[in-house]
Length: 404
Image (cartoon, helix red, strand yellow):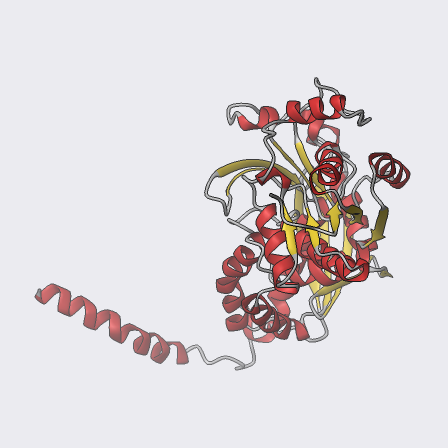
């Protein structure tokens, strides 16, 4: 016997999986299902999503434009830490999940729903991210994960279900079987031919970045201005967070910047191959590290670098709303209070070059670091004592090991 549920809020994309889930939830639980679609900057046909959800039987459909909130409150805080998972992945899918979880919980409260549902599979990370986020915000919420309940095992099973239940879904059995996630920060591709590691990613999957052969034969230079660690303008033109990231996507993508083919370690224990496009994020990460290089104290910078892998893992594992992530965020944000200034970048054939760095509060002092006459600003004889003191333990260790 299934638990009695009165109303469900479903994270609904309008694609094959969530369309089947919408119909299945109504059939299996016999209750009202409210569809929720988060507009995070993906290629979204709102009219088609509304039409399909209504045809399948959603009692309501909410489509919320969350692009500005997504970039301002999730992407930018993450970039203040220069966050990379396993040294490469910019966490484009991971960082969107806490906002979707929050939105589902907020809507459940508004609609007096007692359950939420999602389309993540039982093999992946997203089920963990959605559910840990939801439980952190509402410990009493009920969560329905159809992929862990029903007997379907493949895309073919879902297409058969659509045929037998008159669900009109514009998907062909011959279409590439990629699992695609998209938002303002990135587009990801998994599954299908990508599951064979000997296969190069097909050229036709890349949508946001040009092939190197098709990129301009001339360099393009831009400047990005920062305040408190966040970008605030491009080429002296102030823009909203979402507009900044969107513009950087267009600029970097046109130069073939931001492609990644990665085999990563999922939280669920398996290795998975993903192909990612994060053009604007790749450019932003390079620029942010450049402005930090002249405005951030050495030890603060090194501490951030030491903590970053832990911070990245918390996001990847769905622990955005955890007390440890919030504590790390407070430390990271404290370091960003003096990260301000301007960075010049040149892009050419997939490469990014830093051309300039400037800040009114720069810690870089040419009078001290110069190889020319420094007007006695640094006494080079002081280095002798510094080296001798730091060599004491090394000398002692060597003597003792020789005695042994």
